[in-house]
Each structure stands twice: as C-alpha cells, then as structure tokens.
Length: 300
Image (cartoon, rainbow, N blue to C red; front, side, top):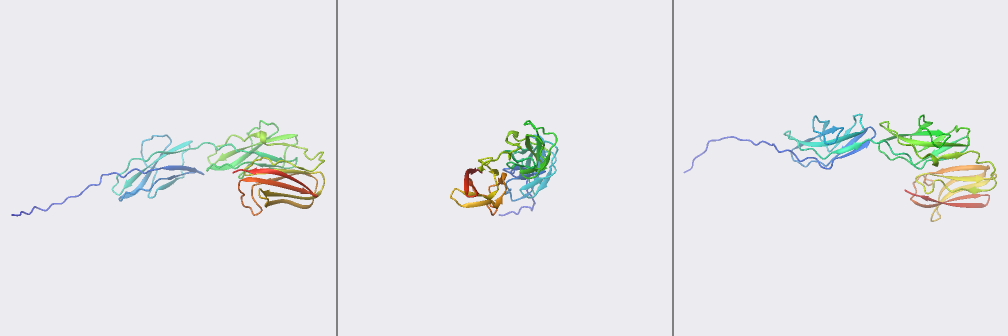
C-alpha cells in the first residue's frame, strides 16, 4: 500500500563567505597607489571591497571603494607617510570574505642622486649624474656654493632629466655643486656628494701639449665626460670604438678645431642613438696625425 504525502516547499540559504583574495600587492606611483591581487574563482563572485588605513592591523570599517576586477588605483591619498591596504571578496548574496593579507606603501624621500660630475670653465658648467629610479620621482634641484659644504637652502635651478647647465658660474677659483631629488609628494632627498663635482677655472692657461684625459667617471653608467686639450688649432677627430674595433660613435670631425680644452659628454649610445651593451670601449683622439687612446668601461 502506498500513501501520498502532502506537498511542501523549501529553499536553501547561501551563508558561506568567499575565500579571501590572495597575493595583494601595492605599488606607489606619481600621486597614486596601484593595487593588484589574484582573481577570485568563486562561481557566485560579485565584487571586491578595498579598505585603507594609516596604521597596520586596522579593523575594517567603511570600504574605500568597490571594484569588479582584481585591480584598483587609489588617487586620493591621505597626507601621511604610509598607507596600508586590504581587500575582501563579496558574492552575489552579500557574503563577505575575510580580508586579504596587508599590503603597504611607505612614502620615503627619494634616494640621493649618484655620480654627480661637473665639467666646464668660467663661462659655462655642465652637470650630469645618474638617473633616479623611484616610481614617484618628480624633478631634481641643483645647488651651488663656493665651499664644499654646499648649502641647500635656495636652489640654483631645477631639472627634469639628469643634466643641468649653469651659464653663469661665480668669479671664484673653485665652486661646488650638489643635486637633490624630489618626489611628487614634495619630499626631497639628501644631497649628492659635492666632492665629485668641483670645477677649477683657468684650465686653458699654459696649454703646451696634446692631451686626452681619462673619462670621468670611469667606469660609468650611463654618462661620462671625455676631456681633451689642444695646444694649437689642428684637424681633429674624436671617436669611440668597441672592444672588437668597430666604430660606434663619432663626436668630433673638424678640419681645423681651435686650441683649448674640450669637454665631450657621452651617454653610452652609438651614432644611431641606440644604447650600447656593457663592456670595454676605447676613446680615440686623432689630431694632425698624432693619435691618443683611452680605455673606458660601460657598466649597467
């Protein structure tokens, strides 16, 4: 014998939270922080919630924002030196996961510029240095003084690339320069070393023989300065060869260059503007049939 039961209805409740996002990373840029994390593989995934605070281990309150993708760019940064982030996952039923691991950004000042070098005379001084690699780098400030302990109160000028021209050096036997780096948040680095950037005037006095001086700095990356001295006007050619003897750069090819001291910067590129590989290179100076050669090392 069989008995039919009475019909009834039922439903299930999804109260299971998604797994928390994994591998949260934060990268500081110019006036922004970019977050990324692994994508959720939950079938009922809906969106992510992003949280931010200025202290680690913070409790979750109101989300900074929501995003449907595994990335977020924070452009409204608080006026502090550090920020911490976590991310959670939400499903279509509103269930929220535990928070991801924390990711932080510490807004330290940029590092001091390296390998500062000055070359020139009483009418024009050129400065070069190694480029800063901070993601939030903004610009450089150049300072000048007549003593090696250069005051960094009022900049001589600013530069957005790793070079600067001083067209009006002071009427003193020696002057000194330092360079600092600034980020987009207005933080300034410590100054570069000043003792690598002194310039002595009067270098053209008493020139009596042909000279090809050692490049400075050497080894270098990415720039160096080649200095040569002509005791009298003569046909002149200055060129760079790689270790195999291949000509890679011609700087000077003058039928009759005048006497004096010349400073020629080189950025490690060939005549086509292509960056050359690390290695040994040779600077060749030919003047009136006389040839001088110096060895240089490009490091990267």
